[in-house]
Length: 141
Image (cartoon, rainbow, N blue to C red):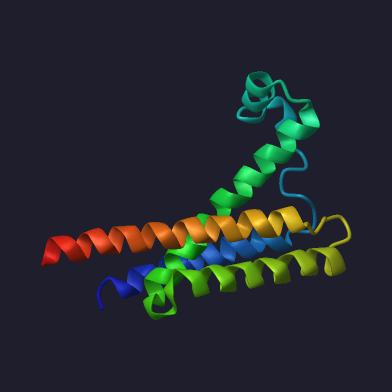
């Protein structure tokens, strides 16, 4: 039970941050000129991409990274759901965010690619928890 309270605290802080990013009135990277910054410039140079392609790949990867904690924290708090249900719920949560962006935030762009990336990130986070807990369980025996 001692470990549960810090996980709940981390999950609450993470969700506040995630909702701020997801529901911010404008694109959160609007003023950052991401096309001219690493790692986007690395992607462009290494794979000979045009700037728009490099940006899309960078944005997709960032969305995956953004949702890894959601899958990990959700499964750590609700292990009986299993990683597959946690992933499905994270995907549904992502759909809600993207639809809200489309309807309520005219300067934002809801995207199916974001839903795919967000769901993949949550799946990665949940699977990491399964692997870590499996190894911890093996060492306890």
